Image: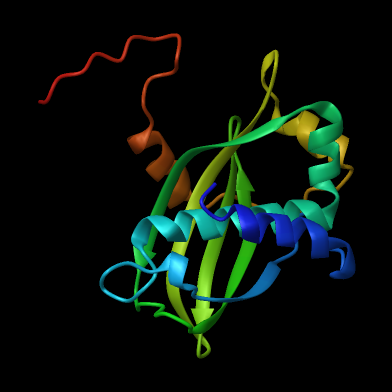
Length: 182
């Protein structure tokens, strides 16, 4: 994680922030730091994903899911992610990061994340995640049951997200994935 100091600060301050439900929208006020920007003077495209990691961890911490993950020795991993840029967040600019669970399918839990500045969406992303244990992937049903939050009836994964995931997935680790350029 490129933002280790921010993560440690997040851990240290999370108990003072209001608790959230797993299906609530998490919000974090941030500022573009010198370590976030590239030669063009705005947040580097790859850095957004590291900052989005913080948003997901904030939601997990404040909803109690992180404690459940640690207790069960589960490790969160990203399986796929897509990002769209609308405007640049520049050095020292204040912005808000918002994170919400978008939905689930039989394998992944999907998050939608945004960088908001001046009341506008600057950057948006969708991230497909899984939880792993030493025995392998943890089912979403086991995750939701262990965390103890009820899935809202209106939480339906948008069809375009399911199509995106299906169309961009690589073969599973037990299947061959030969390298050649078509």
